[in-house]
Each structure stands twice: as C-alpha cells, then as structure tokens.
Length: 492
Image 1: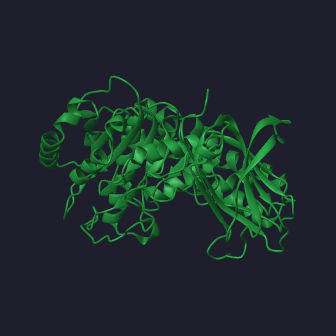
Image 2 (image 1 turned 180 degrees about the vertical axis):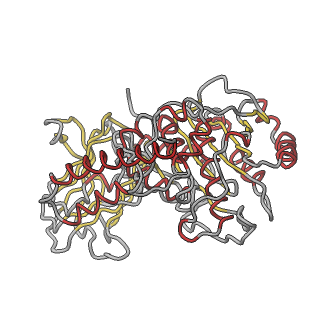
C-alpha cells in the first residue's frame, strides 16, 4: 500500500471515529430545541479541520505545518476539539531577528504590539509609535513595552524603516521601551495557492493569510513580556493617558471573567488580552491562517474561551488615522466615532458586590450598571422602598458620584423618584450585605444625579452606596451607568 493510500485510509478511519463520537453526543441532546442543536453544530463546524498533533508546532516541523494548514476546514476532514486547543500553551518554534533594542530585563504591566508591512501608499508607523509615547506620562512609560514586528520580506524596506525608528526613538530603545523584530521568511507556511474563501481574489487571500501569520508570530514573541497585551494596527493615534484608563478598566473587572476587552470598535485595534492567553491565540491564528481575516478569527477564539459577548469600553481610546490601506494602497476612511482624544476623566469604580430587590428583566443584572462598558441594569416597575445597593470590598473615600438612568431609545425608563445614600457599618451575609446607617446625599432629577466634593459632605469611610426608590412608578427602570471617583486609594 502506497503512502497516498495509507493517508486516505487514515482519513476515513478518523472521520468515522470522530463522526460516531459526535453522533453519540448528539443523541443526548435530541430533546433540546432545534436552535440549541444548530448552535452546537455551528461551533463544531468551526473546528472541522485536520487533526493536528499537539507537537507539530513545538517540534518545529515546518513541512507538517504546511501540509496541515492547506487542508480545508470542513466536516470531511478531522475534528480539532477545544481540548486540543487548550493544550497549546507552549511557544511556537520560531527564531526572531532583533532589528532594534534588546530583550527586556524586567516584566512590564502592558505590552503594545504592532505589525507592519510596506504600503504602496503612505506609511503611518512612525506616527503611531510617536502617539503611543507622547500620550503616555513618564510614570506610564515605566510600565509599557512596545514591540514592532516588521513583517515585510523586502529587506531593504526593513533596513530603511529600522534606521528611521532608531533615529526618531533612540532614547526609548535605550530605555528598553521599544523593540523592533523580524521573522525570517523561512518560518512562514505556504502563502500561494490557498483556498479562495468568500470569493476573495488570490492576492487578497494571500495578504490576509500572511497577516494572520504575522500576528501569530508577534503574539508568540510577546507572550512573557508583561501581564497584559494590547494589539494595535500600525496606523492609529492614542488618547491621552490611555494606560491609566486601561488599568482602571482592568481593576473594575478583576472579579469577572474575560478573554478580550475592546477599546476600539474598528478592526484589530485596541484589543486587550491576558498575556497567558497569547500562546493559544498565536497557535489558533496559525492553525486557521487561510480561513478568514484576523478580526473574524478573534471572534471565534473569544467564544471558544467562553466569553459570549463583546466587552467594549467607551469612549474608544484609539483612532484609525490611515487613509490608505496596507492592501494595495486602497482607500480606507474608517473612523471610530466613539473615540475621544482626552479620556482621562474615567471613573475608578472600586471593586464591589452589587445586589437589588427589584425584579430584574432577563440578563440585565445589577452588575451591568457598574460596568465600564456599554451595558446597563434593567428592572421591572419598581415600588417604594426598592433599592439597588453597592457594597464596596474595602471602605473608601469618594470625591464624585454620577448616576444616569434611561437610554436614548427608552427615555421614560428613568428613575422618576429616588435618592442616593451612602452608608457605613456592614451587616448581613455575603449575598445580602447592607449598611446599618445611611446618609442621604441627594435626589434624582430627570432621572440623573451628580454629586461632587463628597469627601467634604461625608465624614466617615464609605462602605455602601444605595439608590433608593422613594415612590412607586409604572415605568420600568434602566440604570445606565454608575460612576464613582475616589479621592484616595481604598484603605488597607
């Protein structure tokens, strides 16, 4: 039996084995709705690809990578399960060239990754790097590292770009804040003759497939440099003190699970990850590099790691500034209309437990009003005496409080009659904790309330904050946002 015949027998054997296993699981689900079945089927179809041994990348077998990656992602090939993906915690076997800078001597809080290639029209990389550094304070610069991946096979272009970067940002390179790397072409998988998904022309398929590999190698390099990783494109500008805002958002969500936090709604701009997820993400992009654009793959990756919904922060911290795309120099006028140049006035929202006795509608639970993203609490018509309580993990000093109810499309679902109170001396169990005494700070007017200089009006450290309904209403209640600015760090 020849090699070809052996492969075909192996394919059939694995197809039958995984198909039977899959059908056996489906029998257990026969009583569920058709919608649930289709949902499971869609997720499974994403992984209908070749069966990839965990060691294929770790062993650096480039030929096997190429053969594996050119197979189609459909039910006629192998099934690659999430369990296999979760095992991809090791690094990709790639050697990088340092074009500028040296390995970091200490771990940072945030790594910012940029991948750049030669454009037919325009070049925005230098302006992007400049914006990152200029919009950061001296203290913020101590906590970041910027890694630029020059993913261009034209060595003369790379040499010229490195020279420009080294001249303009020499002090950042010397300070260990800026590294420029390059991945040799020999490490790339096949980029010609790939599948033409979505009827894309061949050159478009090659461009976006290579871009996926560019990002995979960049993620792999950055995996151990910091606690968190931010991906930017090479044609953006940043808002002032963006790192401080990012840290506030991370702190406010430290008790919740997340895979990706988004600080821009455009492309692969402003996407934040835990650094420990980078190896898996890098492997994932490399596995499916020819299937679809990078930003689409990221949606699937997020879902497979059990983050169902987009978690996007507003206002956006990064704005697309390029006019010409890196693909053929085509015009690209996309702008993020949620971007704000100065987003420094972001609430602190210290860690807290939240609960309410109101009848909550569907999944619009209490925590969503306290979130830093575009979510809200929605309760059915509240009655006199109903409440929404925030119990802080540690007593705090508050400088400013702002509460907004209702939305643009539901302007009558506001708090028509209510008050805001702060309290001390916590009693009760974990789920029903309250303060024994409360001090009223103000009344809601037209559904909104804002109080400044709170620390001058409240003499005690605040353990709780309560929104109290003072009169029943027939309208439902949306608490769109609760923002708290502290006057000092929470007491230890």
